[in-house]
Image 1: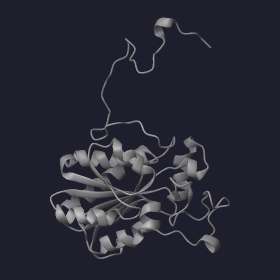
Image 2: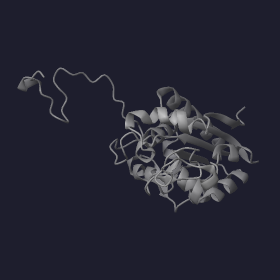
Image 3: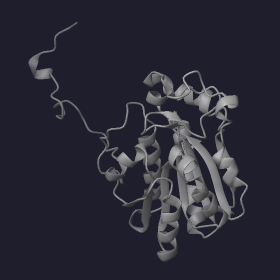
Image 4: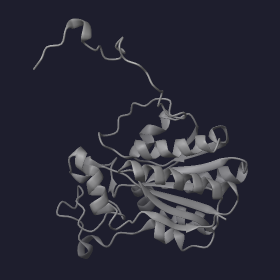
Length: 265
């Protein structure tokens, strides 16, 4: 190993004299990039995609986010948008109240699959059936990450979790629920899509889905849902660098990425 001269050693937080800053890639609506989520977690990437979509649509000063309870809640303080905190599973109802009182605002929820699909499935289904002018974002990693990594209703067959160490067995644990497909079949729904954040191409496609979801909501066409498949290497018992491939092979094989319904002209 070659020793570096003292004058070439990089001090953390300092930029060397011979370095050139080519661009500032800090997201416009993310105040603080640091977070306490696990290494390899896909939720910060998904939330950044939401913030980038809001910035693109110039909705930063005309939006309200309603967060559910979960790992993603820890990231809510990092955002330069108005945020409300809902009880477990109740974010769609809170968002409904905000949207009805302030129809000029873009109102959206950010929830994990445990929060939306286990704790509050009735909330999102009824909001969708009523055609509420809100956008619901579900970050789906197939585990209750915040409470230890046990299975949710979206956990795929064979997927390991804290309480399905041998993999989800339909005979014992039931079959996974596909939330996007469930919502897409309801009247009152204008847009449903499922994206992922396990590679650059999927991140770009997911951001486009989120833009379209906000577009239909702003046009008053109805309810919109974007499900985003996110990595959770801690809850999946896989090395961090293997989580994107695990998502593609295990999660996305059941919860397939794509646009399920769109009322866009």
